[in-house]
Amino acid sequence: MTYAPVPAPPPGPEPSRPVRSWVRSAPGTHAWLLIILATSLVIAFSSQGLEQYLLHRTSSNLHELDRHPVQSLLLSAFWIENPASLPTYVLLFEIVHARVERGIGTARWLLVVTTAHIAATLVSQKVVLVRIENHDASRRMLHVVDIGVSYGLAASAGVLTYLVPGRWKWLYAAALTAFFAVPLATGGTFTDLGHAIALAVGFAAWPLTRGRRAWATVRAYGK
Image 1 (tube, rainbow, N blue to C red):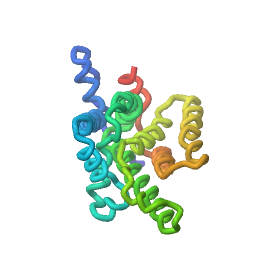
Image 2 (tube, one colour):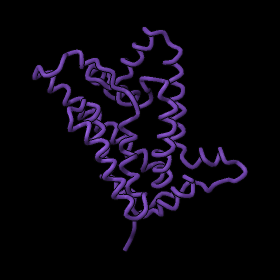
Image 3 (cartoon, rainbow, N blue to C red):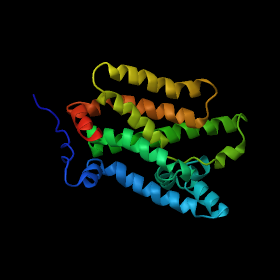
């Protein structure tokens, strides 16, 4: 019987260089954070007019998806609408993204968050289009600001389920499902729908967590 090769575990910790060790253990997460820091600074120091232009130009709304589909899907993952929320995202990236990246490897982590970001964006915007065509939503929704990193976070949060030890994973999964399902079930927006789709992608990524001593790796770097 043959087994598919699995990614090598992340580099071990370097006690003499804790910051370098921490960053090297989840390079994708920290590269993403660095880009978000740069774009947030651009927004923070821009005039109101330039800020609105950048937010709309980099959105994955229906207008931009129609004109620049690949560009809008890519750029929308590197901007957040409110730079003041950056510390919160830094914390979430370290708690969620970094742990998942260490647990399943950078390539697999990137596959999950990319798939979730694209799927959640396209499906949620398709729903917006149908609502506009049925006159259930304003045509202004064609140009709505649709940027951010939350779809990727929702997907990673789903994957994290399989890295939690023992029965705790089911309690975590139930709480996570409720967190995203309640807003959707109580008159949620297209963003709430996108979060639910991204979470489903994360849950569906269970096969990518097999064959790894995932929790040992997560625990080693996540203390």
